[in-house]
Amino acid sequence: MTSALLSILHTLAAAAWFGSMFYSLTVLHPRAKRYFKNDREFEDFIATLAQGARYKVLSAIGFIALTGVLLIPFRPHPRFWWALILAKILLLLGATFLFSYASWVLWPRRIFASDDEIPLYQRRFRQVGLALLLIVFIAIALGVLAHCLV
Image: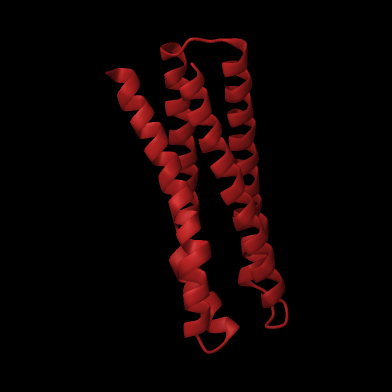
């Protein structure tokens, strides 16, 4: 029962992260961009939405990592399983690095960008968002694969 609960929590946390990024990239940002008259208004809106989210996302990443670690004793450990888990760990570390880079490097640059620089940072954030989406998708797929093959 503990294994099932941990698996559910682990999967739901990863799915929530994936879903929120997917929604943000495919629905929220494009529609908000059309709604606002100029890039500065759009940026002010996005900054208001994002305020305080950094630590919530990092907490979610930590929760995903913790539940993943807690699942280890409940699974058999064939060599291919460890390879999949190692790949998931590396992907999670990569996603955490990319999110941190976006949060502590790109975000301040975006906030203080001149009107001419805004489109550049919007493109960079979209690229980072798509990369994060792909990384989290692959990590979830590897988790499902690891679960199904054991």
